[in-house]
Amino acid sequence: MDLFDSDDDTCSLSSFYTMRSEIPRMDEVHVQKDVMLDQSLDALYEKRSSTREQALASIVDAFKSDLQHEFVEKNFATLLDRCLHCIKKGSTKESLLASHVIGLLALTAGLGDQAQEILEESVTPLSQALKSSSEALKITSILECLAVITFVGGANAEQTERSMQIIWQMIDPKLVSNVVATKPSPAVITTVVSSWTCLLTTVDRWTLGPKILQGTVTYLSTLLEKDDRSVRIAAGEALALMFELGILEKFDAEVKGSDNGSVKEEREALINMHRLISKVTDQVRDLAVEAGGKGCAKKDLNTQRSLFKDLVEFLEDGVAPETSIKIGGSSIETSTWCQMIQLNFLKHFLGGGFIKHMQENEFLHDVFSFTPKKIGGHSTMTNEEKRLFQSPNSAVSKARTKLMKKERMISLTRKFYSISS
Image (cartoon, one colour):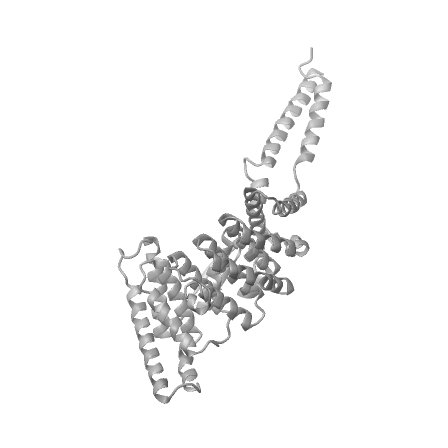
């Protein structure tokens, strides 16, 4: 009996070509992603919370790993509606994920009518959710969402200032009525200040008046004395931006140009503000050289020292820190507090999707005047595609290994027959 008969050989050759046809191509991967997104959107109508959470997590991953322009074009209104429903009615985890999806939705849409609609449809439900929630995770995720959708979709100063006021009221409830004053956690304070500061980078001028300005600087000064370093860092960045925008210098002109109050009151307001700025300057210098031991987040000590050393240099010489982040073959460079704050906030929000969005998101290219270089003339693969096509444990790699074994078997078969004949 022959070691390999002809039927087996034919079968092996047939299997070889069948397996080769089963390896997914790039276009098939994108089709699979589209199907997954459609299924995830449908799953947001399910009653079970865990099902909706899984669907939202899948959408977050898809929006981070690639720019889902076609899906957004067809489904942004439906997706937005379901996410707002999840924030209003769902669990804390649902709210966190849904808030993230809405922010990613705005970043994917970019400038235009869709981003403006996302902002206008979301601002009231998000504001109501903030007022009714006491959970820090839910509050911080909604705050970041509101900041991102306003950053993208805010078409005028009024929209931006409205969002800034909604954000700030979480640490200063006196700004609005019917809000129960509760002591915010350090995480909430940090997120409020960083979100508010990010939006301040887009405001051409301060329009809220000298009194509110002085109250804001006073509050930020108190935050510099808090034990939590993330709170101090956020307050330091806010003050740095206010110095850079010249808001504090404009205080003098606004007080003198005000029709309210006497000359004596104007003088007192100016004296108080100058004393406050002097106090802040001293606080900044102290934090730039602070020794370890104070504060629970010791890993932030170096970040704090670096930030406040940069701020001291800026106050003394007017030189803002320069930063550079490598993206593929290019680098994003910042030379102002404004640019650095925007970049850090969006990098934090996008997380693992930051590189992909910086490479392909035209809105971010415009914001940071960034033109990415493509390696070898080809765009880089997403993490999901790398896992699918390049990982040793991927289906493609396993199929490729099987093919190689089949090819060796067929080669041996042919050699055997050539020797036999």
